[in-house]
Image (cartoon, rainbow, N blue to C red; front, side):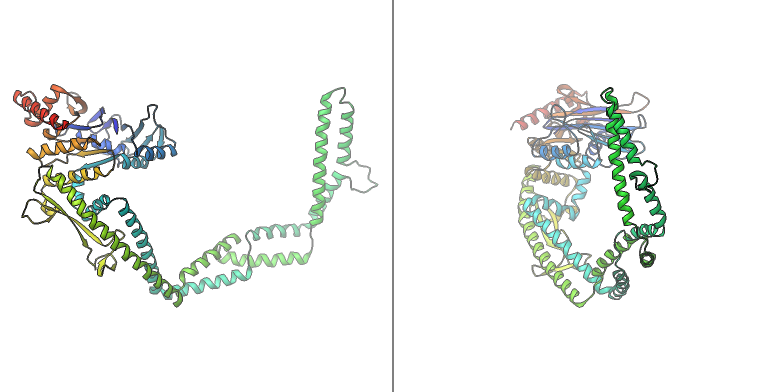
Length: 585
């Protein structure tokens, strides 16, 4: 659950802290006081899109901070993800989240004391929070959203079926597109393949090896300067090892080092420092000996053969011909050849390959059709259960005679989606199957079953949305639910029933409700009021908890706009008493 939320510099909110409880938290206030900024702050904290236009110019940045206490199974999922990213929970086990947005639009996020990508907040939000507002009601009118709602309700096995369908559909479309492209562009593919084969034949005959051009360049340089290299190596070797003319009495380096070492060693007993220097001269003598041996090997490897030099020249000329056509160096030529071989396999338009692709396309099409039929059957089975459960919830929301139907219909062929025969019917198929899902409302007995977008008023749609969310909550989902004025267009007994239903939902979830209805606010375990302050040069808002008499005055204001009316306060107290009795049931 979200224990605490602090908002700074966002819209009309200068700096305020909301202390939240585990049950039902209600946020009320005058229109324009800043209730929407609380929901906006929640959205930012959990990875929502940042709007720099909502940031106050002073101090020039908006900061939203939250303290989250996780329970299973979210604790394991979120905790592992945060730990892998380097974050740590606080000492009391809670997780601190932070989001900063500047007036320039820059955004930063922190999780568990570490800077994180904003997407990390989004990942956490998916696990712990679900926000429902009037925009969600509008989304529920879209067929795709209604299908997604049914799929979500259907559960884990259905999701596995959908995943298998999507995988098969992706393979089918990939093979189908490949086959169509090979048939449509056969001539162009054949021409491109001929050019690639010519290049590959030339490269294959030359057989260039990686790094060969650099090796030949170095070898040519050695062969061209062989005499100079030989003279230099011989002179150095003779100076080191004493292989010069025997009549030459000039001492070599090895002899001089040996003399120096022995001289120092003879006096090491008098001064140990000379012994240390003697040991270092011995190391130097060993190094000189190694260099001398390597010079001998170098001299033996020198080749001044003119025929070899000519061969190197000719090979370099062949490689330069390749690099002029295919790449900057021989390594690039080798890579070009590898890419050309891979491309040739893609360009193949032979009858054998086309027949093989056609067989694979048909096999995958049959698999997609079979999977789509299974998904349809799963949806129809879930549709009945979903409709029954939502209908039961509507009865508890002052719609006792209303009924929800969920129609799973075959998607008509001939639209933008490809078509297949599923269960003997030609239908349009997508990665989500071959179905169109439509939620229908029967408002009262004898009324026709009409699609939600035609048969539901604003108040009815609010209650349908709440009923669906209650059904979802019973099968798991995020532990914290936020409802932003989803009771718009509702009043009277229906408003009381919404408050009662939200209160029951709060027994298993943390619920945050932004509302204008006193009938809903009366059911809160904690009542927070957003109040506007216009006393200064700049209008600001803050949030405070109201209890007892102060809470009754706030409900009186919501009832009649008169917080000090004795009759309004008496009505509010009666409403609070009714709600308290209902919560005890």
